Length: 618
Image (tube, rainbow, N blue to C red; front, side):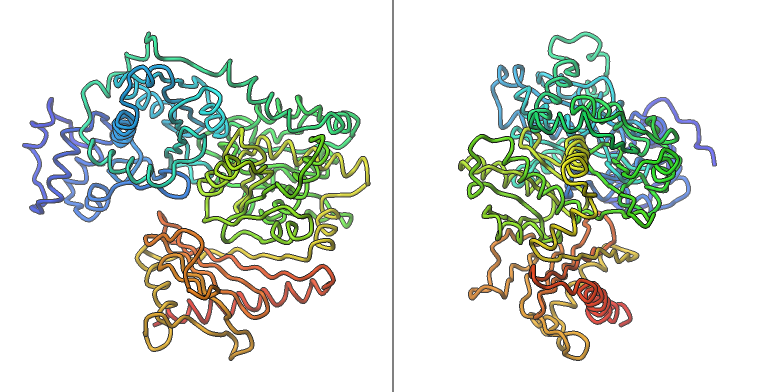
């Protein structure tokens, strides 16, 4: 249905519409019509009002965006709960006002400012330009990349250019209809409490756009407006190369190992190509159908390395070229997936925990080669709740420290920077969702660096020991103990059901508060401790208080069983999904790996059925 022709002014348009009669909804409809200057999204609201679709309008206009694990992400459409021109301006005005409050000195804002980038997604450049416009009007120096750049470039640029903040316009590996904002603070890491909460408050307090916020002509010729690409590009690859000892570069140059590669229609190819050139690796064998940036992501259902089928075209290309390793990045190049051909001719796709084991081992090996006098006891590796504890096992043998944080690189990297300030050497951080950090030059997950390191490790293992990645992973398990993990996602029809399911686990016995489940499979396996970071409970400590931060608005419960199996339930926040991460592990001398696999499968199914599914049936 075509939208009606819009009158000249917002006030005239409002006078033609019959509103809902609900004061709060009508106020938000009025606000949208008075404020929005994008004809397409304005028409969406007008059409919904004309159709009296009050339910949809209430969802879109009476809710607002909030910060999740990786910033703000939503569908691109009209609405205060979505990503569009108006919300982008509101976000930028909130950011501008909060930064001005923190840095009242005009001289500081004009000298340091904010760096902004965008990736392949629809409207990315437009949203980035709107953010730049708002910040320039507030007398911030603005570094806006005039071409698509990967997210790690923004984290790096904040530090390299000494910026006050950084923004990447991206929805990472989400569906093509989505976009969003990743926000980096002056330390180069994702914004963390209290700044994220205060930034969101500032956004809600500055919702009405200034007239100047719509006028992009300020970008035509402004003394505080710069494209940092030519400065940042060589500096990024220089710091990346410093992590590669000369002996590794020589091995790479002599190695005949080749890699099939896909950027999944994202921005990755030219950046990974340059990384391979700098590391003296053989040129990439790129998947032609997925090589060029394309916001429609036409060959995949969802542009995520984690999705089933995302790696199929790369495997096909690898087989055509007689290549044994496949590398995949997501569209903004902060995640890495890997597959390798085994001797039986079958492809092994490593999960995020397995890559964490390989890359963690490699980070320690590289450190020992790279540093003249390595002090392993001063080193740290970091993982997040729900990710494998393989690095903890490695730490016990090798003598470094393992630290666990809440989910998300915003927690891991801020913890890493805190430890670095205390004189510790942070070698590596990872989480199950295929994110890896090798250097605090980029205090975020960085798949450019991780992809280069993975390829260098593969070349080193093949050249010096004739080992595949699969064989090296088995060797790691032989040395530090076998670890196996599972990841499941439970989907519901509304977000409210997530809290209901988790509350049922908290009130498990006759709906009595604080009575968590105690066993599964008729007592075969008993729960020995519960960590509930929503309520602030950890029964593994005498005082029953957790040592990690409590998040009352997020669902996060971990059960540990008497055989060592752990299972974590985590609400997604912005989506009606409950993610379930489980793990079994053994000592190095325990070689019954198949039994552990079977036990983990059986226990995970039992926990989901007994703790969750039976609740759904009630």
